Image (cartoon, rainbow over all chains, first blue to last red; front, side):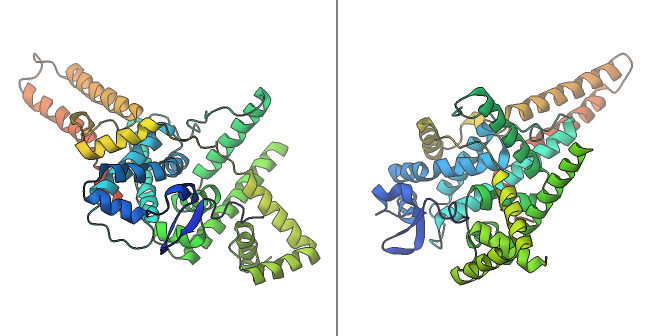
Length: 220
Length: 146
């Protein structure tokens, strides 16, 4: 129960007690993120490539969940990597590099959402978020009915999440879909664990309220 | 039910409760029907949240990022470039064209002596719009979360 999502993909790296890295890298865990970044700062292109390969799936995934659009998520993740590259020589090896990248990605996506809303306000075009943008990933469902049902569920989830205030929305996504512990969410967002808990709690309460009013609307 | 217990249930659900506290709460769940019901509803709500599975990034993405990093941004990537969604660029273009068209319809050279002044007003509005659309992401990224 519960813990199943938590910490999935994370593991301790021997020799770097402060560094937590994805297990998917078990074949090359002898080199930490910080080491790769240090090599990048020295002009080692291959080190940067390895850093990108190591984190691209999760970063694009996070951006996609925040933005609701695959293409935009890839652009956002690219900008995060470029920022990482640009700051390779100046970043202090403190904590986990990935947490820093997550923080930059989260801020960057929130900025994009704000710009999107501004553009929408100025142009009066429909908000693609509200339409549940880009809900057509690779089709793994065995039949059409199941596919339809999945899409209905995804759209509903996206609508519910988008109805949340920004601060609660981010915490919910990081906790529910990224499976991150309160501590790490707090580090990413620069808030305390207590604040993470409160935001998640309020988000769940809001979802409950929304689901209850939707249910009462249907029964009426 | 009090707020503390509700938070404890959420902590249990997401795996944030210490082993001893989790054991304690599970014991209560066995004995208290209302608490059990509340936890089941919370769990159902949590698990009903579902988004599409994530796909692996295409290997060309890695090459693109590394190339961009090493060579720096291309000329086309400045301002409303590759990173700006197509619909945003299209909207900006339509708004700009609309502004120019409105300006052209409202003022013709024969009706206005001061044609250049009108032109300047339209251009200023358009510039403001383009400025808004091409805010540097680096500037924005520095902002703290609310």
